[in-house]
Length: 266
Ligand code: KIV
Image 1 (tube, helix red, strand yellow):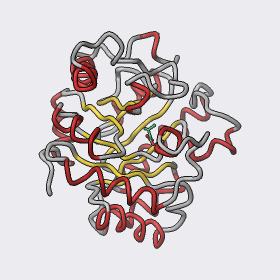
Image 2 (cartoon, protein in one colour; image 1 turned 180 degrees about the horizontal axis):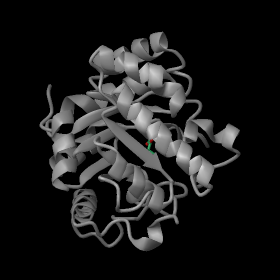
Image 3 (cartoon, protein in one colour; image 1 turned 90 degrees about the vertical axis):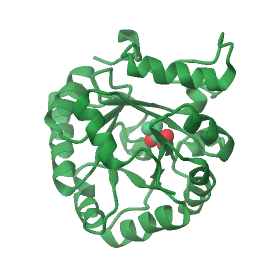
Image 4 (cartoon, helix red, strand yellow; image 1 turned 180 degrees about the vertical axis):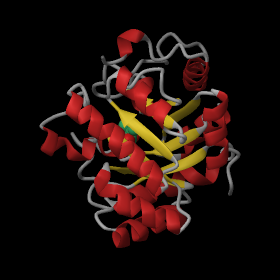
């Protein structure tokens, strides 16, 4: 099934200043609610390792897990574009990236794949682009590198690292990336990157300056073990239940009232 939202539409939304909404979903029931509330992109994220499987990181998530969850999300999505996540160590070479992106698209039904990593992913993005695979690059805080980083914290407060993230974003766009997701970066850096790129940027803990916003569904429903400070519980006090919480997220992102200044990093 080809969803209403396409890569071309996402690019047009950036050009027209129409904010892009993205939420995670890992099963058909939630995906259907998100699709009905016109969420633009549904991310089948490897965050499922934490919110569905109960691990304390995304590292245990396998390609089989990602294919399974993408496969049960994609058939119900008529409006939303389905973005499938490439998990830990699943794209360490162009050959491996092609094999695993093929699985997410062919078996899972994803319309775009996401991969964590900067310059190291340029060759993989180039090859996927050559083979017609839309890619979302994930920069800033990369949870798959949690042990190398020594924890989950803001990336790019240091000027050298900020310059590297901007350089990586430009390189990945040049390689063919269709979207760039930035996690936990200061607002000023997110703004600089958003202005420098032609492709849309999606922020999570990166401020309203991005072309769109993403949250983990369980965080924004207030049911995860520990929601990050940049997230918000949209369900508590909501008379329309889960659909109402999702609708409120969509309207607040479109109106540029989410995230608030307090939900950003500087
Ligand atoms: O896996 C995921 O859900 C993600 C989001 C945190 C952006 O990558």
